[in-house]
Image (cartoon, rainbow, N blue to C red; front, side, top):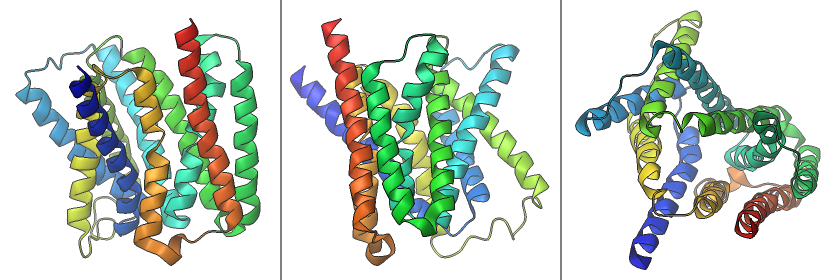
Length: 294
């Protein structure tokens, strides 16, 4: 069993590293955020559909649930749309530092979603997150719009994770993901039609765009969606949550290594980012300790 756990922990770290690489691909791909996310979801939906058919999974769901999944897919589509747009108008480091505030938004929204009381340590950690954000916002003034859009993306991510937490009890998680992504694809397709349709102007692939977006849709989207389901059978929720929270760290380190001067920030940014990332890890630690004591 220890060997199995070690194997799955390493697998999870690889997946989180892949998620961190998503931001790198967002910078490399020359497409605007809307066609980029649409193509990403189209590839991911295709790969997941082949997987579900190969595994003979039952895709039958009620019409009511299909409508719900489509609507929730709109949330994940908006999350990715704002995420990649923030990268385009700011940079990877700014975007990932702000995205890590998703845990802060979750701690605010979770008592509302599940009708429980606010927890003191979550409120205190939330205040620390605000301090970190203020540091970034005050000294990285040229990225203000990017910061705001990245925070919106983090908020949407928190809403989506809370909704999915309730849905996971009803259907296979991969089946839920398939219909949610299909719903996101439909909504973004409508947006594209309004913006001029599927024209060369919107989908003007250049250089290695085909390769990068192929990797983004398959290895960085469909594969993690499928693989994490199996990993969660062997690892504790705390281990999974703590490891996933390392995604911004992996992403920022990769960005600094690959893009160097483009990702060079003020000392205040790194201080603010460390405060935010530390609170995310502390939140995971306190949640696990509370479960152990219970």
